[in-house]
Image (cartoon, rainbow, N blue to C red; front, side, top):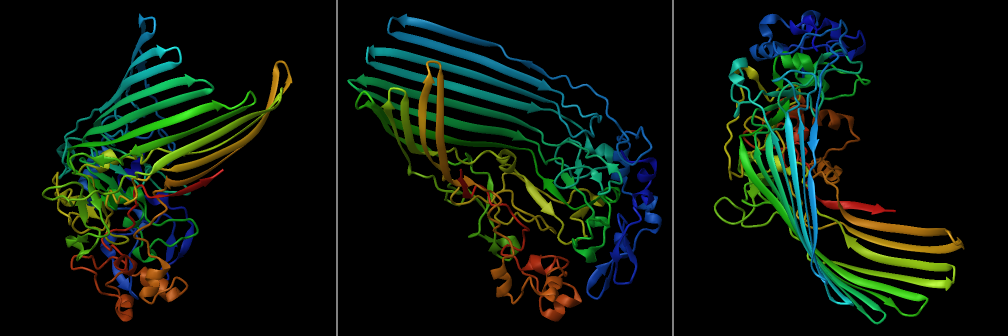
Length: 605
């Protein structure tokens, strides 16, 4: 918890007395020193600042919203900067799992079985901080499982199995707070705003850790439903020395969400807003300048997410069919062979409201550079297209052989191709709604300050291809779905082994098993907006040139950028305080959007 001195802006204790370097004026750069954003000046094309005297923010500069939030934050119970508030709390989780199973023989050859269970869990998620500043929200999760099976012996050598089931899970979260009571303006829902560092953690600094404050505010809040009906059928037929089996399966996934996540505003604060802009993320021997808690006191927001409450419905479905035979060719030799086919759709939002950035779509808010948003489906505002393509060639042959070399030794070998499940949910329920990311347009500047509240006006559904980036920011789209996202992972497996009976009750086995996988999801392996060596070379720049590196890190409005002829904005609203490197990206309106579900991963075991 912040100490009494920290709450008044006195961050002198944050200094470690470690010097990290000197600025262009020859002044020492001290670790965790906080710099006054109102003292910006340009020296040799770089933005410099003065430190707050005594590393203290004057009381008149502390934002009223920060002051109001601190009234909810408990006082530390210890005198140290860290570990000064050992939380004491109870967290009683209650889980009930009733179940019922019924088996009934309708007649000698026809049997019916049924099963139902319910798993209900209520979790207060206490973390030792009081509501409303706690980031943990009470959650209630309920899952119903229903299954009905019918088995009929049509003939002594012919068995039919048919089954159907439903897994229906729900998750509800709760919370309510009037943000106007802390002077917070612009929120789209009655929840406490979230303040944290990106991507997670408290408003602290380290190493070494010099204190600050834990994250505060309401995190993810949504009421979710996940219906999953399934069906299966199989037919087993024994004929002479063959055992045939045929079957099919169907699985339908649904994800329904009523979302308030991000509608209260998620705000990430860090070092740079109270740091020294000219450093531009240089490595200072593991040290930092600026202080996240100081950025909180001034409410200089680096980045985050903002939305309005929304409702979405995602889903996918999968079908499969197979045929196989176990053929006992001789008393010693058995051959197993079969073929399976799988077809699965990729995860999509059924009403077409989920945005997706497209490299082939001009962004009208960014000078028609690539990255405009498209919306799946047909009709007004839609792209009359699909984000990706389902894969129709998932055939999986299998072959196995068992040979009895001697009465006590058996050779077994096999090979086959199978296909994994496709894209996972990966938080796409929240990203399917009105989730709007934002980020600072330039190093050292905030995306916004809290004086007038959240400046962004958001509506949902919104089919405007130019709705991102939010005004005055450079951000990232929540989705950039790969066109091959519908391709499932393919796994080739093979094995070779021997079994040997040593004694009547002792068997030893040695088997080699190998597999080769392809097309696994690898979301971080394709950086579509990265500054590649080839793209840099197209502008006559190189990472091996120190002056080029300095140029890339310089703002567009700097003297250096002008002298090199790189002071031109890519589009009219592009912030001139952004770096030259940002202006040269394929999509200058975004930083580094993560490609979603690219099948680029390989495995070999």
